Length: 277
Ligand code: SAH
Image (tube, rainbow, N blue to C red; front, side, top):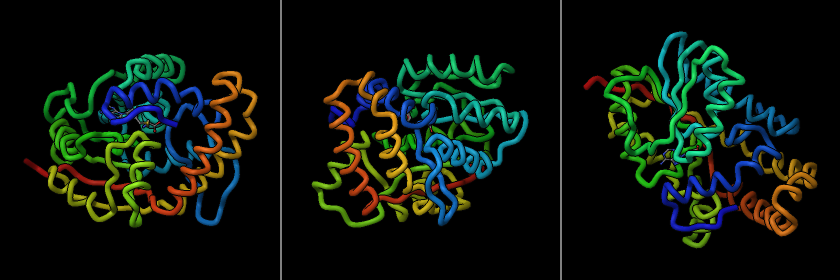
């Protein structure tokens, strides 16, 4: 899925500019996993993605009038859904200029009340004053970041004391060989994956009191089968946009990613509160 290494922020931006139409074809304008209640599978991938966004909105617990930062906002669909369902104001940042422009366009259509704004910015140098947000979330963006600790410190800086942070992220959940780790990092354009053991400490060191670590691995892993089925179903459209070589490559690559990720990757939703300074 990815043609570049090492995973600099610029490489991440180029990756998304290339791959976004693919994810829009097989899923929705949300660039994250789907969620299935225990024991359930099936249904469309796009629906499962929206179900996951709704769970994250619930976990974040933001309220009307609050100001929320979306760290790694993608195409703006999760931020717009958050703003519409809670009445909070959301500012999203992404490392990709074209994503920021697309998110603005999306918001103009789906958030007519103007509760959302999007910017191109690096999460490791947030362009916002200290204590200017009530809450923040980072949904499947942390694994791309070259320096997790720096991002968490930046988010702590721009949150008011007591402000909430939600992080939804892929983690390593089993021993991996260096070869497999490098394959996964390359495939996900990830600088590094944390583990369930290291994440809470990193958040605590950055100034957060961790409230909950929710392991949703079993609820999101059907994403791999759902995307494979969607590739099959939307084959003609993927071929039209990307050509034959991409289509056969993506099928093989997806099968390899699925096998490896199902064996050694998990998924956590962490919620935390910004400690007083
Ligand atoms: N949260 C969105 C998008 C997830 S994709 C959704 O759920 O749909 C990962 C996002 O992280 C992309 O928008 C990418 O541009 C962003 N990202 C990755 N590295 C970043 C960085 N250093 N600074 C800001 N955004 C970054």
